[in-house]
Image (cartoon, rainbow over the protein chains, first blue to last red):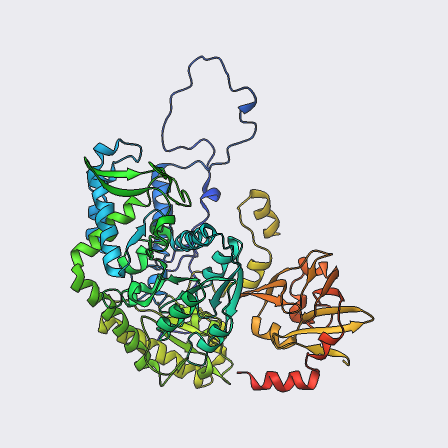
Amino acid sequence: MSAPANVNVNTDTISGNRGLMIEEPLIFEMDVKGRSGVDLPDVPQHKERLGSLKRKGAIGLPGLAEPQVVRHYTKLSQKNYAIDMSVYPLGSCTMKHNPRLNEKMARLQGIADLHPMQPVSTVQGALELIDTLAHWLKTLTGMPAVAMSPAAGAHGELCGMLAIRAAHLAKGDARKRILVPESAHGTNPATAASIGYEVDPVPADERGRVDLAAFKAKLGPDVAGTMITNPNTCGLFENDIVDIADAIHGVGGYFYCDGANFNAIVGRVRPGDLGVDAMHINLHKTFSTPHGGGGPGSGPVVLSAALAPYAPLPYVTHGANGFDLVEHDDGPDGPKGSFGRLKGFHGQMGMFTRALSYMLSHGADGLRQVSGDAVLNANYLLACLRDELTAAFPGTCMHEALFNDDFLEGTGVTTLDFAKAMIDEGYHPMTMYFPLVVHGALLMEPTETESKIGLDRYIGVVKGLAKRAKMGDAEYFRGAPYHTPRRRLDETLAARQPILRWKPEETKQAAE
Amino acid sequence: MSGIRFSKEHEWVKLEGDVATVGISPYAQEQLGDVVFVDLPAIGKKVEKGKELAVVESVKAASEVYAPVGGEVVEVNAALGDAPGTVNEDALGKGWFAKLRIASKAELDELMDEAAYKAYCDGLH
């Protein structure tokens, strides 16, 4: 059709839908009294024994038939943006590509149908799987021990820090202070504080890395350890990490390394060689397990020889009759020092299966290529966008490219506006306003699976938006997004007066 | 506004007698964006200079508010509970956080006056 669109035509639809952009009510608003997906027979004559447990009010579930439920949730799922659709600049923190082979392995009947209470003799394969994964994690990190049970990254931090505290207490040395750099993940200080440590922040220097002199100045006999994210949250490798490890060991402290960003160095650097005492590994970030809405987290923690005796229960050992599961700490000579149990059962078996599938299908050389490609892709973004945006720090980056908002100065466009405009372009926005040490931060992690064609398309959009902002089109940005089911949301009101639960009364009041 | 002092962490303090009123500066609220929640200290809490006094949460970030001077909390601005946006609208006035009975007036001398603070902010980003 070559004729220009007639601007005077009213394009509002009767239904309120716009093509496949369907206006979908809440499932509660679709309630029809008495409708149900199944026909249940009447309850036969019986004597009621519920007593005070008898339900007094309505159960509050909407009545719908099965096809309506299927349609409802299918329509909602189509409103979602996902890694399976396009470039996802939030990167591996949220989710990177989940190879479908992993999913196939996790669904094998012999794995998926196991119960954790089964006798050990009937789950030898599962224990071997845990043991093999543990072997890979120890080999890749150069560490002698690993705790498999932590259920997520932050849980892993808790595990490592409890081991550090147990090691100090075993020596009768109740230290109080943990040094945490500003370039560390936000969960690091939270973990230290949650088990009673005093968090002492260490500033970042102009390179976006730990200020070594400031770090050393804070050391003392009351320092229990340090928690450092490497590569750090600015997407940079902490070059002074060996000096930091030596310095903390020099005062009798332990070195907790947040290994969330291990995906940038796997197959290339062994944290054990850097002097790390404890490090968690987010299986989703490095070993491609599903995450967020897709599955539970899993955060195994590798431990140095000094911390290994305090590892949580249970763990897998090689027994006389095959694999065995150690669930109690008391050996023939009394307790060995474990700080106890962190979670029910033995860890996230489904995630273990997927991570091992990823490792075995990639091999050691393949994992080395994973980190190489992740870093290459991020540096390609950095190099291509450097002239149009402003890089937060000079030089190259690791697995993520970080920009500040200097390029928007004087345009009247903020990082938030920029992110909203990206939604109209069909991209999920990048991480914004984080890390806090960078003004108006825009943080992008392409991950290793993005092709050059896909990256070029994304770069074209980001560059185009930056040019548009600089041309003085602030009005456009302030109004974005334009092409979404809902326009700019009032995030302030939502945060100030959060409505966390749907209630019929509230809906009525809100409509008034 | 005379007699007001500022810290490098962008808190302000104004002394009347031995009671210091504390809040965050207009620069700080500007950087934070819309404030959505303020976690105020308990009355009677004793806080050292430079230690956490309150937490302020905006659409962008959650940040600690450090005590620019040490003292005992004698009053908090409970109105911020229902109207945290007051911090954005009137940071130096109705958006105050807490009042401290201070231990040492000497600690105030270590803080910047209005002119010095303005120069400090101009030097930032």
